[in-house]
Image (cartoon, rainbow, N blue to C red; front, side, top):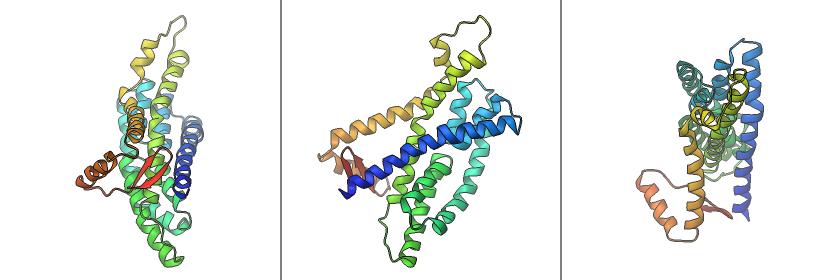
Length: 248
């Protein structure tokens, strides 16, 4: 029962992160960039994606979807990486100071706020160590190791998966509304050309992991998978399976 409740919490935080990143933060950043900073859509779209979604991947994917000049997503991506370093230095310590009573919230915050997957995972690991130490000394509570890191990576994975969908939506809007000339016919091939193919890997990998978890559930394959992870120098923490969450 406890493992199922934890899995539900993590998945819900991932779903809420999708709503926040794509339906709240993205339109807000795009609006501010257009209205107050007078950016063109070619700049505003990659900027909104880089700030509100995933960072580098989102800026490149959505920049390609609207046919922005290649230099624009590159410039935005460079700024995102620099900003991610600043976030990595500041946000974990802010979470330790204010969210040591809410470890899952702190972990989810790192996944949503820190851009680029690597920096987000690193911040999740930092938060996991910092908050467990603070909670033990201030509250006498020993939080389970790995919970916050798991929340961070889960939120980031959920956000990454929907980059493909968001790029597809923007490709449709720009093909049919923004870039379409009067009398011009837009076909599905144009949308396919605009869609960066690498983002399909996010969704494909997610489906593959789910299928793998279902196929290996309750089999010795789980032990082999954990052994392989251990040989790679990564400490197995949790394995999310359909129907619950188990210690790896």
